[in-house]
Length: 455
Image 1 (tube, rainbow, N blue to C red):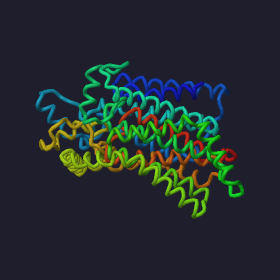
Image 2: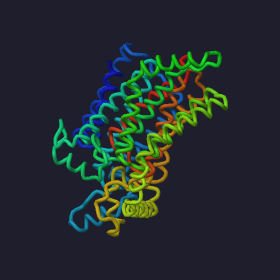
Image 3: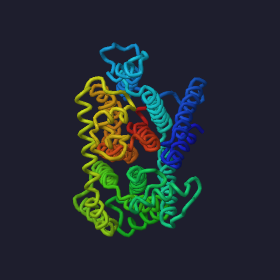
Image 4: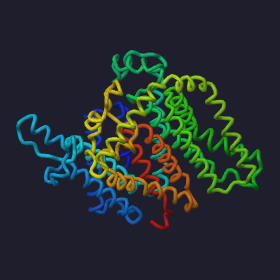
């Protein structure tokens, strides 16, 4: 039951606008903490399997704890005065009252951000513990892929029909989305985040379909028998995954997100390469698969090629502004490379380095990697990145070493490639629903990165 409650939280998170509102992500944090406490109580009472996965993740856990400790230190007032940002001294002089100095420009945002990171870690840990069973991991990925496609299908319905109000979407919000140049955004606020979510779902659905083809293409089987088995075992039985793939592709195209589309394509390519590499296909089989993928891609993406080109050509000003944000953020990093400005403090720090080059209010650096370096400082950011990349490496190792169900760690590994690439030019992991999905799938992938005999 805790596993399915966890799965419900992950699947429901995108619906309230990606859980970006305070009430939505607060409920997410409380739910994750509650489930972690329930799991701990069940382990203590012997009602749940013993803790597993600690050895491969020990260095990731150490790095994560160190990064979280640094976030707490950034918000503390007992740190050396030489570490405190000068803004606190200037504020005290301007107000005429003493103010306790800190490294962080926004201590409250740092604490709130810390609670979200801990919730993501709890979701990852629970997924590792409950994902040891391959059947349960497969069910979890399947339910996530199908439910995500259902939410995306609802978005397509709202966008296509042109409804002024539907369920929790009010008229003002619908009108705001329809004024984005025919770009699909619901159930997220930003089309780029919807594209990232569709990319994650697409990788899950494609990976599960690939997993269903195991043993169908043995050399001794006749071609007609191979086709019959494929239709019976994949097309007929797993039709809902094929439908999910079609929905996700439509969402990616209609969102018109360049970064999200490119990240999704690279993720799917990594997934296919990882599975085919493990199975050592013949040259002819590899050529047939390549031609098939290119053919399907041409049929699917050709109709939107012109619109995507117009999208790229029509956003030169937006790209210039984004490059300006990157440049100002790099200047901020150069000014405080070791201590940073505090987790969650980017909106405050950017205002100090913006010379009115960007017209709108900048709340994010549009690069999670760059923003993390600015907020935490280079050393702590590298430590946090290490904590995230170790599980990714474990999933890739599972793809190479596992003899059965290698498509499960391959899904997590390919998903990580897509999300990390997109995070370099946008901020998907700063959206609670996307970070929750990332943590959940990575946990299942790590759980399936080792054989059942070695657990």
